Each structure stands twice: as C-alpha cells, then as structure tokens.
Image (cartoon, rainbow, N blue to C red):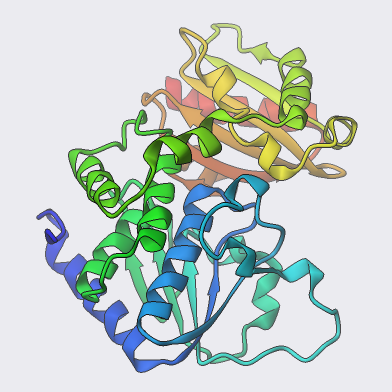
Length: 338
C-alpha cells in the first residue's frame, strides 16, 4: 500500500501517525466515540476503528450519544455501537484504559458520552477538521484530508493490518459520504485511489451509494417540503436559506438523519454563494449549517459564533429568535462576500 502523499506537513503528519500507532499498541481496553448526530464519516470511522482494534486483538466499546441512523445499519457491526441515551442513568460509569474520538471537530461535539470519561484517561483525537484544537493527549489531525476515514486509511496502513471487506466498507463509507458521492471539491486523486483500493477488497460501491445517497425516507421528503416552503434569499440572491422548526420535525415524524442534506438545496440554486439551514434545537437555540460555493470561508463565519468546520461546510449553534439569528448570521456571511 502506498504511503501518505508528500505535503508541507508530511513529516509532522507522519510523526502523528507514529504516535497514534504507539498509543494503540500501548493500551488494551478502548472506548471509541464520535460526534452527536453522526454522519457517514462519523459512523464509518467509529466502525473502522472498531475493526482495526478487533484485528489487533484489543477489547473495545463503541458508543454514541444517540441512535445510529437507520441507513447505516447495513454496515458491519453497526448494531454494536451503544446508544448512550439508552444506558441506565445513575449506574456506575464503566472504566476504560483510554478513549479514541473520531471526526469530532471539538471536544464538545462528543456530547453526553463525556460523562463516561474519567479524569486522566488518555484520549487519542483522530480528525480532519481544520478547526480542531487538538483536545487529545495524542492528536492525529490531517486538515487536508477529505474525511476522517482517509486519516484512518493511513493509520491502518501504518499498523500493517490485513485489509478485510468489513474494514474496507467502513473506510469507503466515510469517503463516499464526506465527498458527496465523490462530487465535492475535496475529492482528490488520492481519495479516488483509496476508494479504488477499497473496491479491490470487495466493497460494493454501487450498493453503498444506493443505500447511503439515493434512498429517501418519507419523513425526509415531508420535512424537505416544509423546509422549501420557508426558502428565502438575501437582496442580491447570493445567500439563500431554509429553516426547520421543532414542530416541522414533529409533524414530519423526522429523525436527525432525515435532515441531512437539506442545506444543499439552497446552496445548489444557481447564483447562490452560501446556503444556510437553520434547525431549531430547543426553544430559542438553533443550529446553523453553512455550505459555500467557495468564495466564502464558512468555517470562519461559524467560528465567529463558536462553531467550526471546513471552508465550504461548517456549523454552529446560536441562541435567540429565528429572525434575530438569521439577521446576525447574514451580516457575518455578507462580510465574507464583500
């Protein structure tokens, strides 16, 4: 297998890989976590780490704050990811030698699962978000990677693991979903080479694309209908946005997974530079998702509100009325356009 491509950070990245390898070899009982409302890269990376640890003969527990979205249920061992919210409250916290966090742009994105962390437990932070602040004792971060799954490919290569179809399925899933089906600007030649290699290990790319990108739930269609009814534009039509309230979600019987991709609809309108989704979380707290055509660094905009992400895709949480939040966010996006 080929080594990671040379880059200005190649030496530093190789050192991080070696430190991550040592971290895994030094410990035996792992807690593997990803971020709240997990997407394909979060689930694929969680399961990929689980596959790697299994191949190394390590013991581990995989957990997320909520349910694994149904569309990922066909991935190997997805049923083994515990739903933290279903664990008995008040019961003693389990003990682990160490923690591996994947695809978490910052520590808070881990969510309530942090209640299982014991003080002093070493944490390996594996991620690809440029806004990651290195919250682990050991950090393996490659900001130019298309997905955390790409970083895990490098780690798996360094660990000299025998590639299996289940592990390849997980890596391919992360690459497929975080590149929008290999359509986004982060689809590098290297990403396609890795994807091609995963196909050689038996991945059914057509089946994964059909299940993860093409299939729509009725709830998704219903909540999309409500979101598009709220479609609005800035005066110059360069910013477009939709919003989804808690009532919209309830009326549509939608889950968090059903809201994935809604932000792409305003972004994909011809002439729009930035698309936004305002999703009500609780009362006057709203999650804002940003998608950029490339002119605006939406990670910088999200950071202004305490969030983060990538240049073209980012998010944050803001409190206030929807009207107030829209106005504040639009002002900041407009600065990026000027």
